[in-house]
Amino acid sequence: MPDKKVLNIVGARPQIIKASAINRVLRRDYTEQVQEIILHTGQHYDRTLSDVFFEELEIPKPDYNLGVGSARHGKQTASMISGIEEVILKEQPDAVIIYGDTNSTLAAGVAASKLKVPVAHVEAGLRSYRKEMPEEINRVLSDHVSTLLFAPTDTALKNLIKEGIRPDAGPPFTIDNPKIFLSGDIMYDNSLFYGELADRKINGFLDAINTRPEKYMLATIHRQKNTDDIERLNTILKTLIELSVQNDTRLVLPLHPRTVHALEKENPALLLKLTKTDSVRLLPPVSYLEMILLEKNAAIICTDSGGVQKEAHFFRRPCLVLRAETEWTELVKNGTAVLVDADSDKIREGFLKMIKSNDLSYPGFYGNGKAAEFMVEELMAL
Ligand code: UD1
Ligand code: UDP
Image 1: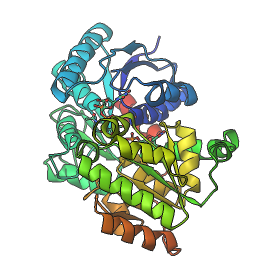
Image 2: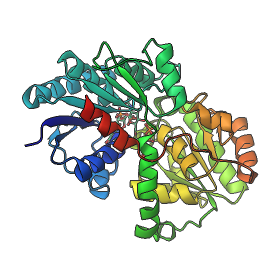
Image 3: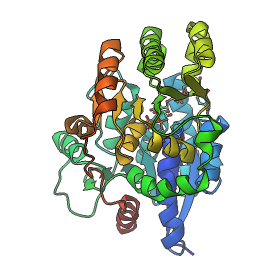
């Protein structure tokens, strides 16, 4: 009988992908010692945002799915807290693992900490210093109820120290004596593990979508700021379409349902244009392996996603960040990512500069590819 029980909590697409790295290590090395319970809040429920990742990444089906679905932030987070609390009371885990900065992260952090169950936060310490961004509130609050804080980068570690978390804490670690680790990034682990697999397993995917390597820009857009403000969304999409037509560079656009819904409601003509323009390939959200293949072969990547910015770096592609700031500041300092906001001049200028540059370098900011192993070892020692 395993002597530890951990509750692995996911809800949104990137969390499922992140959790796969921990699940892989637990199944490979710790089945005797640890019982893993997987809880899905149901924040993402479309097949293309959820089930597809469980299947492709071979993550066991969640033991619990709370099925909370979409709602306003307060209502959604409240039903998650209530559901997670029930599961924690029933399962009595020794620790709860949370990922990133979504409403599911916050809900799990609140529920577990109030029940005095230690929280391990994967991707701790990221900051945009913009509380208008819902994720910023989720990150700050989640970090401050955590016992183990796994900072992926040096900047993240320093951010936590600035907020008063002591870098020299010794065991026993508790919510009042938390421990920060510079752990590396679990998504880097995944990019190494799945990068090669993508080439082998689905190498026909680019042909299937009629797209040639290096001849396209890959774009994703889903942030609240870029979807709820239709002017920003219009500017971004119109500029990307223009660039694709003028530069004979296909625009490949796997679009989050949130963005599709915003266009359906506010600008159906632009949505139609995306489907009718020859140089644009509009897609539903793609699987992780498909996304990796798209990233690896893109001439340039334009995104407001946190994960995709880093993957551009992992796969050595230049990146335009469709935001005014980023949590992954090392990418901008390094010159491989450029902040272009939703500003058509900046997007154009960034595109023309970055697509031509061949002197970019991609240093290893994100650890040694064994972040998940490290995190599980520290969890075992808790
Ligand atoms: C959420 C996270 C964001 C993360 C993103 C990853 C929060 C506050 N935001 O944003 O940090 O980067 O996930 O993708 O937690 N919808 C569907 N089908 C689904 C899920 C959502 O159509 O399966 C649509 C609904 O219209 C919903 C909207 O997307 O209202 C927004 O979904 P929500 O989960 O609130 O936020 P995301 O934008 O997905
Ligand atoms: N991703 C995917 N399919 C897509 C778009 C993204 O598999 O159509 C992956 C991407 O490779 C990355 C993660 O989803 O690993 C990023 O998630 P998202 O952009 O939704 O959220 P964020 O990282 O901004 O929180």
